[in-house]
Image 1: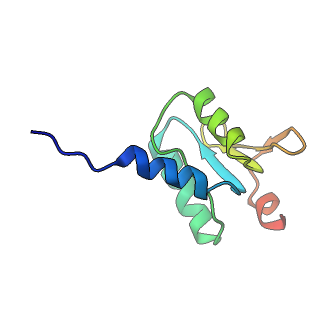
Image 2: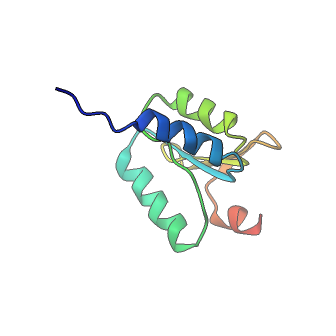
Image 3: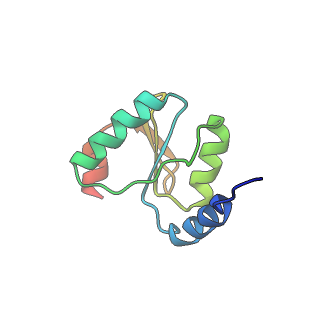
Length: 98
C-alpha cells in the first residue's frame, strides 16, 4: 500500500506562481541557507530557496530559469546580479536599494 500526496504537482504549481523572483538563495550547507533566510526575513525581503539541496550548478540553473534578479550564493557569501552579470561580496544594502 502506498501513499501519494502529489508533491510533484504542488511543486509544478509553485514553479508557475513564482515567476517573478527577485532574490534566490543557493548553497550546499543547510545551516548557512537557514542563516541567510532568517537574515532576509528580518529585513522583510522576499526570497526563494531551492526545494531540496542539490549541486550548486543545478540550483543556479533553477535560479536563472526562474528569472531571478539576484542569486545569493551562501557558500561563497556573494550576490550575483543576473541582469548585469556582476558578482559582489554579500551586502544587504544592494538588495534593500533595489
